[in-house]
Image (cartoon, rainbow, N blue to C red; front, side, top):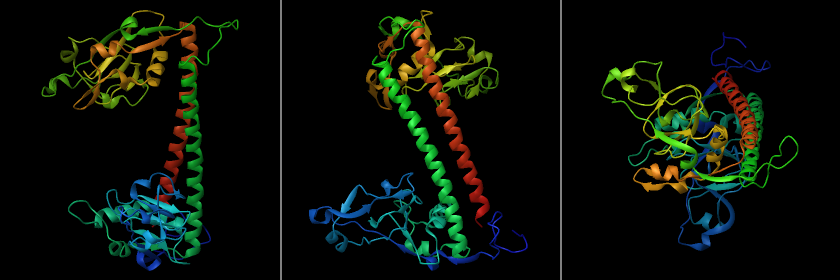
Length: 403
């Protein structure tokens, strides 16, 4: 790789030296829109032609089967067109820039401006890997008063730098393998999450039980309400109009927005002694739960803090309650069923929080159950970190391998 030549990527396969050339997207691909057959004519629907709408373009790279299918008559009586295998579907409205690659011939509705590579001029995965550039261009050059939409003619004008087809193919193959690796790691994560979910179902239904150290059954589980095992308190919010309340970072204050982790070591903001002196501090190892807006978020406090008024704190009445066990149990059950509908969604009041039913095994069995799920959480966290690392690597390659 040399910096003496213009328009070359920072990172490049060693066998390529030629400068990348600027072309319009329409020179190397056809941009094809779609259409929708009349929904009032049943003869147009239920055929064998795949027909996609933008809501079907999610995180899957490849598309094989659409939710809805049209007939040959439906195709003929609409502006929908058959797109060949290898076409890159590109959503052109209401979420510009979502992409996917066709593994099977298909048509789309009018919410697409799909990219059909011309033979020996554009590699499918090469252009798919430049989704972020396509999206940015579409968002900048889209127009419309009701919703922004980018036209096919505008997409054809998009200037991009392209190497020769052989280099495109090698770059495309490289990112295809990298995406496949990420996909496999994501499948491992999904499997771990499904395994944890399966064990939760079996353990909390008592279909699966632990044995004690001598191989004997533990005692039967007791059914309690929250009010039987805990005193429930709530947090507060100091006046946001008084800046004197919001300076001391040593006194953590947590809102629901900060409850994205299981273990909570710090709050979103810091508050002063003046704001906190009339309110109880949430001590270490306290289980907390949101009961408004985002109902049922849970966390375990690992560093003393205060919380806002939409978060409640469970203070155990007995030493025979394992905090992590209750965390996992409440994570499993449908807390919504104990709430009531309000303007801003389902909420819980004091009575409904206290009425939540929980099944408690012996403390020893609680420990074993929480140990199992903590190990699963550790596996899941490590796998999620691994995926994040792969995605960061991909991001780095994307920045260095394109001009």
